[in-house]
Length: 122
Figure 1: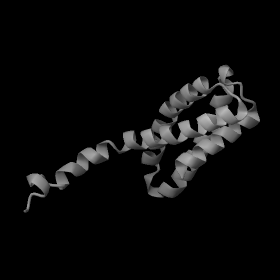
Figure 2 (figure 1 turned 45 degrees about the horizontal axis):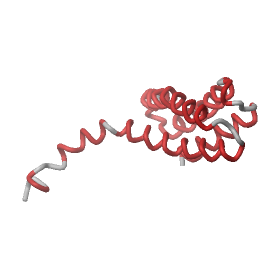
Figure 3 (figure 1 turned 135 degrees about the horizontal axis):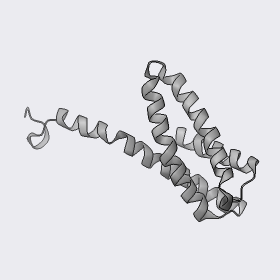
Figure 4 (figure 1 turned 30 degrees about the vertical axis):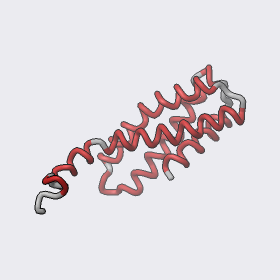
């Protein structure tokens, strides 16, 4: 059967799958980081709702930045990924701290950002 399953060529599915890769990556990141935010909020007695909303909006800003960064520096992908993730770690920590309803110290904001990015990067 030359056409694949049900006569549909698998080559025709490759383009739509690639088109949804950034959305899939964003959903995985949001899932991982929401888990970290939930555990952190419970562990440190912080407001869960504001941390989850902060995490959502921060990721909606930082993920496109990372995709753009990687597209610009695609020839050195590994180094670009590490640098981009480092910038995102710093940016997320600062934003988490600056949102007053999160009630985070600088130490907590950096720890939370480190845990979020370590899990989603891994």
